[in-house]
Image (cartoon, rainbow, N blue to C red):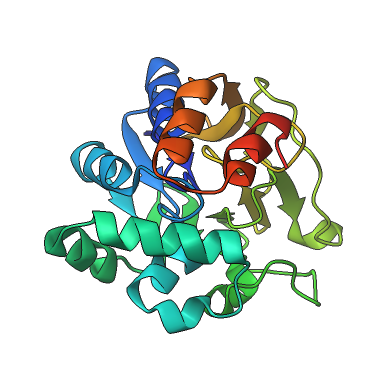
Length: 249
């Protein structure tokens, strides 16, 4: 099976759509979203409708939680709060109920793989952890399986192998990473962001997981950036939210 996995679209419909199409063009059979669908951008409804129609499942991110309970957003910056308030006012009751239904975690066994999906770092995903104090992370001690955990949240793509200190390394985009020899290992993958990259590259990011060939490929694509910026400004949101997309920060 080939899965296309993305995260953190943050109401950037153009980035979400372009990344999804890129993954499908590269053979993805099913699409997965790791959360933070709302926040920072203007097109919450469009993104939710698109994910509902085209994705296998989506997870809840911290911005999705904050939109449902604005008390949760009290410690967010003013730009995040303003955009979440705008997003909530644009959504129907059915959109709100769908966001409420999103889980924090999904996992299953497939062939000799244990696959796990969360929005925040899997070591402390319920508290929206960015960087755990203890970098070592292992899902299990089964020497006959490879455990792979996927998340987003930081908007910075990378690969970490538990037994090798857990530090993240930047991926080689477009080149398949073969993990077939990592039996008994836990590999943690940050899929980056399709809506607001923060690794210095404005282009949208996603990954292709091939469970048959046992490879992971990081991919990037350009998208209609100016169109998304216009949507932000037309919604009356701060110019800062449109401008930050250019620099990938």
